[in-house]
Image (cartoon, rainbow, N blue to C red):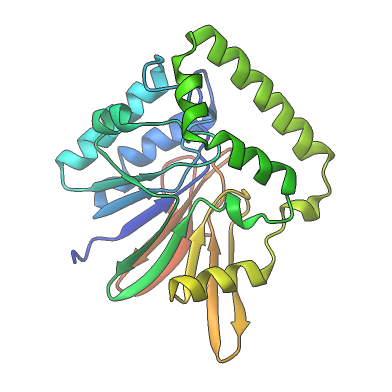
Length: 250
């Protein structure tokens, strides 16, 4: 493969309006990302997504920047998160995204890595997992996308309020990912590295599984600075993107 680095990001939570992460992410797409051979967006690119037919100023800007990336040789891959799982083929085509399934093993310089958004690993958050199973039913998504835009907006607002209340009230341990979950996922996928986002805390740790060592890397969110996983022939590193658009070791 190309010697150009591969970048991974997650949990940018873009939203129309004057959000600091909007400018930061666009600076990333129009700056450091141009040096990459590939960019993997592992979910929650947007704070919410009501359907490809709903206008979004930040969505338009991201699509234009990602198309420019693709035109100059950077492949852009998108995996849905818990906030933007309704992003579909129409927007993906406009942005030049290659859509990925919920979980996938990709190989870089001979090393396979399991990629995921990460929400399914929070097995102690049973309330969310029940909601996820319900919300990912194809018939329900089809019904939601057929509703008028104002209805979708109202329902999405109510769901975000409910999610925020749940996150605030829950024991922080609820969102902890048990090492056994990561180890089992790695064993099933036959990899030694698991990379995901979702929990909003950058982590780079190891779990011992018998004679094997499983590396567990978690991308951070983008409310104050950017969190970027950078894979080169020398391996994988977590880096941060500061306010002037420079990548630094996290």
